[in-house]
Image (cartoon, rainbow, N blue to C red):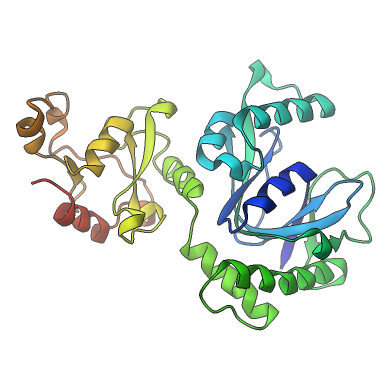
Length: 312
């Protein structure tokens, strides 16, 4: 198995370490032109640049996706490693100027490397960077985790992860380093973060409302069919991409989607508010869903919404 060692700065680490107990972070790149590729859920290590030159944590690579900087902030907020959007924008600007990045048309798009179940180490548990790391290397590097420096770093991270897990989880944590990492893999699959959920749902629906086909991103929300508070998962199959007003109506039970993927508008909308005429034309229309069947709304979640939320 290969892992990625990626360079970041102390402020990014400091902000996220202080937050603690995170289920996701955005390891953003100042430009989306180069892209990034790695095996899904492969280890992703956070390495501080000079003068620290240390591995300060790791997580599991979830996906890479280009996003507008404002959308990355809306999805992940401080989990971008910045205290505010203004601070994030300023850091992007400084890095672009420092490395001579010139974005076409002043693009605000950045590369987002989404990392699940991150673990950040306190200073006394930092791990020395690879002995063969060249001082001039400024890009992420792939390491074979079965041999040499890759193996050393991976084993040391596994050992340090146990203390982190014992601190942040009530449930029992495995005793061995290998079992601890398998615990992280299970968490990553079971506990997708809210920001990653929003990105995954938006991308699955081609960044368009499933009802109106509206493409204006500021107007779109990733809606849970069964809310997280009601044991609904952050899974694409439990999501719909909806225009914000439709999302509100859906959450309040004035809209639903049937298991055969037709929208229903509740008669209560007319009765309760003497209105709703802009919504009733959509009644019984077939919604747009992802082409991949695995990403479409799961019938069990739709039935839950029909039976437990919809104001029939």
